[in-house]
Structures are given as structure tokens and as C-alpha cells.
Image (tube, rainbow, N blue to C red):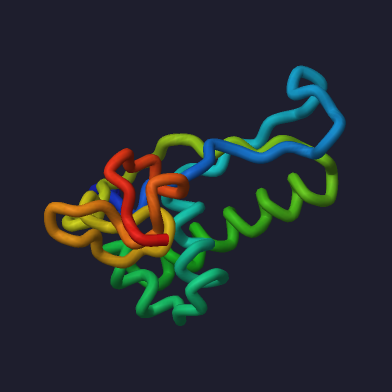
Amino acid sequence: MPRPFQLRQVAHPPRVRGFKPMGIPMRELEVLSLPLDELEALRLADRDGLYQEEAAARMGISRVTFGRILQKARAKVAEALLDGKALVVGEGPVVFSPGTEDRCPVHGGPRRRGRSCRCGPEETGDSKGGKP
């Protein structure tokens, strides 16, 4: 009997839904789907520079599973860049980590209680107006 599927924890929802080569209409491109768990693995390993063991713990999965997810994500990104394909961020078997709704999507820090983020309204979409 196979092991039950483990939902992956994602800290931040993506700010964009995809990327494509410039100058080519979307209808002419082959599309690759990058699930949220693969995007989160790229963020933790490549952008944040975490070791696989720490990144896997943050996603609530084993290190081996994290390595598999990361390998698939890197292959898709490389294929999209090298072969001129569109990359669309899709859904996935994820659950958002607790406390992420109180984090700023721009700098990742906490929002001020009862106020807008320090990033300013133009970057966060907040109409209250915080300090830039």
C-alpha cells in the first residue's frame, strides 16, 4: 500500500501567474505548468539559499521528496528558458503556512498592526498609505 500523499506547505502565494518569451504571442507558445510546490522549492533553495534539509522541513516533506520536487522545477525552468516556452504557475497539492496573511508580499516582513506596510501603497496595493 503506498504512503498517503503529504500536502506541501507554501509560505507565500505567487505574485505573478507566469512568464513568456518577449515578442511571441501566447497562442504560439508551448506552455509548461509549474505547480506551487515546485515554485516554493525554487524559492527556498535557489533564492533563499537554504540547504535541502531545512527547506524540506519548512515545506513539511522529506528531504528526498524536496530534492525530487526541486529537480523537476529546475528542469521545467531550464526548458522554458532554453526552448522559448511559456511558464505558467499552476495550482498544486499545497497548504499555505499559518501566518502568511499578515506578511507583506513585497518584503516578506510583518505588517504593522492597524496600519499599512512600510513598503507604501503603490507597491502593496494598500490605499491607506504607509511609509515608502
